[in-house]
Amino acid sequence: MDGSHSVPVDFRAMSHAKVLVAAGLVVVAGCSRNNIEAVNLANEGDQAKTANVDEAISKYEQATKLDPDNARIWWKLVLAYEKKEEWQKEATACAHAEEAAEKSDGKKTHADYYFRQGYALEQLAENGGNWADAKVPFQTATQIDPNYAEAYGELAWVLLHSDDEVGAMQNWTKALQTSPDRTQYYVTLADLYRRLMFYDQEEQVLKEGLSYAKEDDKHLFNLHTLLGDTYETKGDVSRAVTEYEAAKKSCDSNKCNDHKEAYFYLGSAYAELNPPKKNEAIQQLQSFFKITCKGSNAAKFADQCAQSQEIARRLGGSLQ
Image (cartoon, rainbow, N blue to C red; front, side, top):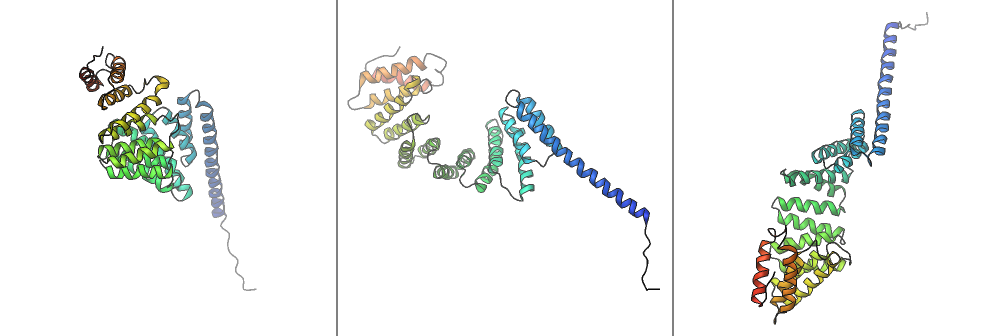
């Protein structure tokens, strides 16, 4: 004998092991088939989304059930829900996309997922939801991408609705620091300064905004109007008139149908000049009165309509 020991072979155990291996291969193969089928369904959803969003949503939803760890498919579903303004479903899908992406990447990496979640929750807040719910997703988006101007801008709105005016101010300022050509944030920040009666800061912000605004900028009217109001508040009616004239000029292409108040601001400012421009004032107020005070907007602009008539009477004229 050579001292070696033979080891008895348990053929039943070997057979059992082979069965387990085979079963494991079936599971892996099953998962692989689910992943492939999920991608196929998502592709079908992509083809349908332009003509039939509901069909696309159905395909994406089926795909997420087959492969719940595929963040890209969840993201497709997010964008489809947004087209339908299904805000609660969008917020939930964003949370799933975030979870899947973090599981894959080991950390939070997709600022857009958090931004869209915050935006969906913001829309829900507009209709009676909780504004505070949108705060953390927007904050997370800015942490992932410190240059995400839009996330700062929306976070500022959320904070303002949560009575955090300082936080709103800080985040609109950050939005402008990262994207100084986003003129809408000059308007919102200046309006907040105006409500807080920080008129010097308001004036500075509006002038900076106007330095970036292009001729066709849709926020040009508000920039000039707010600056005119700032000068009028400070008692500088002449400069206020200049800004109100610029505001009216910026909306002349559509005859100021979207900004009917342009005629009122300019007319009332003409009346305050020393000496007043009586004819010009009455002409502008007459335009405002005809467009606004005799139609469906009369109730909305009731105060301005009454003021227009009073100013016209004071100048020796009348409005019809």
